[in-house]
Image 1 (tube, helix red, strand yellow):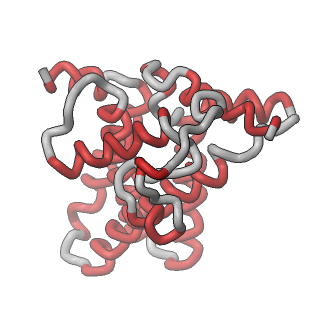
Image 2: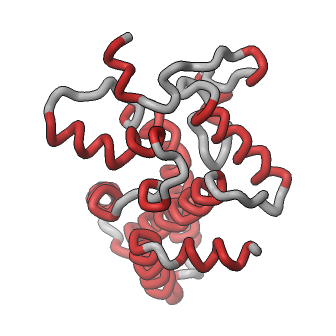
Length: 206
C-alpha cells in the first residue's frame, strides 16, 4: 500500500524538481567527498532547514493575514488554504517559486562567506535533502496511512493536533525540538480546541 504513496509523492512537480537538483548537487560533490568541510556544510544545510522549518511555519505561515491583496493571495497558497483544506494534494507541497529563491539566497550567502563553490553546493544540497524529508513527512501526515516507524507515527499525530486541535502549538513537522525549546509543545489533553484551526484568516478578528 505504501508504494502507492511513494509513487504519488515523487510524481509531484515541486518534489520532482527538488529531487533532480538534489541529485545534481550530490553528483557534483562526489569528487570532494574526502573533504571534512564538505560533510560539515551538508550537515549545516540540513540543520538550517530544520531550524527554518519551525521558524517559518510559526512566524511567517501563521502571521496575521496581510491586507495587501497579492501578499494575502501568496499566503493563502503557501499555508492558509492548507488549513482550510488540509488533505488537498496540491496544497501539501511548497511551490518551487517559493523554495528555490530562498535556497538560492542561502547558497549565495554561504558562497560570500566561504568563497568556496563546493561548500556552497554542499550547503544547498543539505537544505534540499532535508526539504525532501520534510515534504515526505508532511505528505504522509495527511494521508490515510500509518508511518512505518514509531517516530513517524508520533510526529504525524502531533501534526494533526496542530491542524485539528489548536494551530498555536506543535509547529514542528519533522521534529518537536523547537516546540519544546520555545514553549509550543503542550500536553494535547490540556489544550483547548481552537475555533480558528481550520481558518487562519479569522485570526485578524481576534
